[in-house]
Length: 99
Length: 334
Image 1: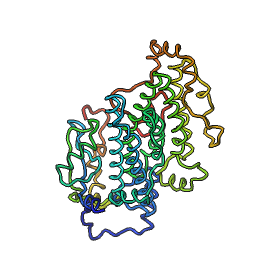
Image 2: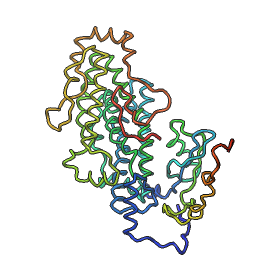
Image 3: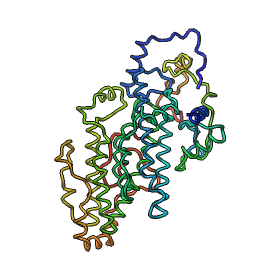
Image 4: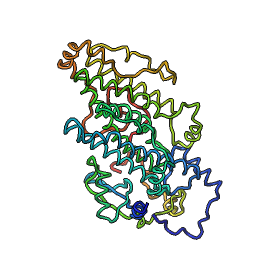
C-alpha cells in the first residue's frame, strides 16, 4: 500500500466556485492534489462538468482559519444586542413619504 | 481547518448539554456541520453510510464501463463516457463528505478492497448486452434516485449537499437509459427481446437495492430519528415500483398501440412471489403488431406521446423522473 500512503499525503484543498459573473465564489467541496495547479485542474474536472462555474478558487484546507462552530459562539455576541443597527428599530409614521 | 484560539473565559459545555443541543438541532431540522459536536454513534453511522455510498459509485463504473469500447455509435459512446465519469465524480463528492467526519480517504479505499466496507451488490451483476446499459440507467439509476432524493435533506450538511449535486446528475443517467430503451423498442424484434431480457434480469436486483423489508431493518428507527433516513425501505421501494410501472407503459403504447398483460399487472409491492412480474413490455405482443407499431412510430401520434423533456437546467425539486412517470415528492426547492 505504498502508493496509497503517498496519495493520502497529498494535501486537502477546499474548492470555491463563481457560478456566473456577478455572484460570489461559493464553497462546493474539497479534493486532494499535489499542488495548487493540480487542484485547479481537478476542481475543473470534478465540480464544473456542466458549466457550473466561470471561476475557481482552491485553497489548502490547512490554511483556513475558522471561528468556532458553536451556534451560541460568544464571538458573535457583540452584534447580538445592537438592534438599533436594523432599520426596523425605528418608528416612523406611516404617512411619511420616501422613508 | 484550524480553529481560532478560544477565549480564556469560554467554558467547555458538559457532554449532556452537548447531546441535548445536538438532538434539538436535529429535531428542528437544522443541519449538522463538520465541526459541530456529534454523538460518536452518529459519526460512525454517517461514515459507514457515506463510505458505502461512495464505494458503490466507484464500483458502479465497472458494469457499464465494459461497454464504452463497444458502444454502437459515437453518440452512445460519448454519453456512456460522460455517465461513467459522473459516477467517478459522485464517488469523489462522497469521499470528500466522508473526510469532513475525520475519515481518511486511503483508509476507506483499503476497507473497500479488503471487504471491511460494503458496496451495493447490484454492481455484481454483469451487463450482458447493450440493452443492459439502458436498463441500468432506467431501473438501477431510477432506484438510486428514489433512494437518494430524500437524502438531499439528510441532517448531515456535507452529505446532503453532495446528494443534491448527485441527484441532479443522476437525472441525466436515468433519461439517457430510458431514451436508449425507447430507441431499441423502435428497432427490430431482436432488439426488443434484448430490452425485455435485460429488464427481466435487472428488475429484481433493482428492488433489492432498497434493502431488507421494514420488519427486518433494525436500524431504521434510529436513522429516522437522526434524520439520516427519511422514509422506510418499503415506502421507497413502493414508490419505485409505481414509477417503473408508469414508465413501462409508455413504450408499449408507442410501439404496439395496446397495453399488454405485463403492464396491466398489479404493481403493489408485497414481497411475495405473486408480485413477481417484470414491469416491461411483452416482446411477443410487439412482433404480433409490427404493422401497427410501424404506423405508430412514424405517425404524428408518436411525437405527441414522447415523454416531456426539459431543456436547459436540470431540476432537482421533485421532478427527477421526467420520463412520463410520477414525480418524486419531498425534495427541498433551493
